[in-house]
Amino acid sequence: MLVVAERLNCTRKRIRQAVLDKNAEFVRDEATRQAAAGAAYIDVNSATGVDSEVDDMKWMIEQVRSVTALPISVDTANPTAMRVGLELHGPGQPMLNSITGESERLKIMLPLAAAFHTKVVALAMDDTGMPETIDARFVAIEKILAAAGPLGIKREDIYIDPLIRPISTNPTHALDCLETVRRIKAEFGPLQTTGGLSNVSYGLPKRNLINRVFIPYMILSGIDAAIIDPLEPGIMAAIYAAEAILNRDEYCMNYITADREGRLGL
Image (cartoon, rainbow, N blue to C red; front, side):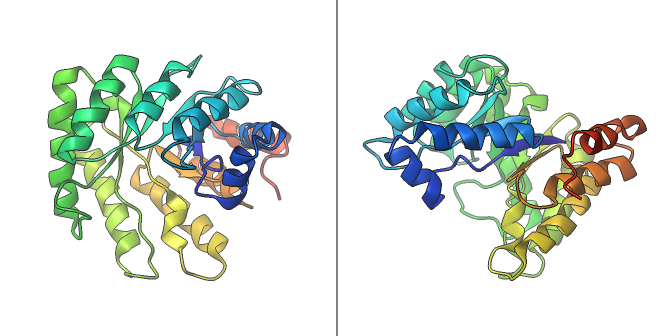
């Protein structure tokens, strides 16, 4: 499973302060540790403020690029910051995080995805707002695919986020996500799936326990990528173990390698 490391996000207080202070050592260390933990992508979100986001995106990507060649998930709703991030990306295929099925968002962001040949994180929602049913999610997915096709964006480069929401606010949220992923894999062939998996535990005690149990269920359902904190205790170990059990790790080599490199954390 493709792991998108989420820690370099300016909605986190410590990250935001480090970016405001231009604490390069702190940001570089965050990128280095996430790469060492097994990340495939480093997510970069520079949402410090409307006036500073573009410059902060540039600065953050420069810091990440100074310590790792891993591809970057450029995470912003600001089209100017997105373009700057993609222009500075460097090696590997960038990821555009994110679009929705909202008409204006598609019109602004999809041409950038096409121009820079990115992977795309697409949230299963549209102009009607946050979907409350699985069928409503699929209406949004159809809108996204209809807009992406004419631009030449490949389905295998589109990662649908089924909108993972807290089970503390609705006990069916996790089950809805599991079913959405299963249906996507059954109905849309090469279309990919992803999501911020830790959202499921928001508002609950011992969140790490919920997260570690939820991940294997999502892998069983067929999820292709996860937006997670790879430094969260036991998270990467749960992924390696689940993929070995579910025959998504040939001869358990990823699991064995992670153990040899001390990345199982047990």
